[in-house]
Length: 89
Image (cartoon, rainbow, N blue to C red; front, side, top):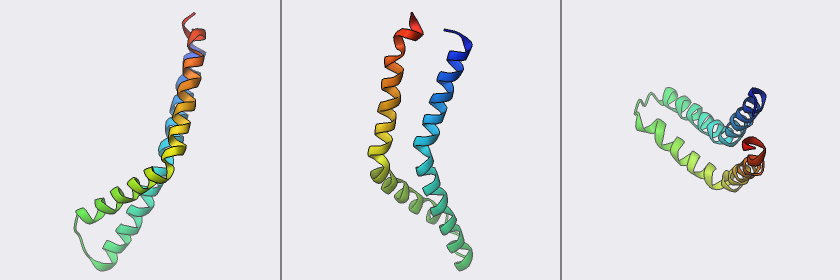
């Protein structure tokens, strides 16, 4: 196994991680922005008000995006295992 193979494998792993985490991070970002605007408008500076809506939004996102995320992870894992003989031998 040469350096190009290792770099390609790492690149594919990082890309898969970004694609899987992207929707949840974007959802948390949007909810956090909305809560921040609400806090600035009403001048409520409660710290837990910023975290609880994000947690709820991410949990709902996991329910909604969960099957798609699991499919992506299983596809990546099966590709790694199918190429395992090429990497070792």
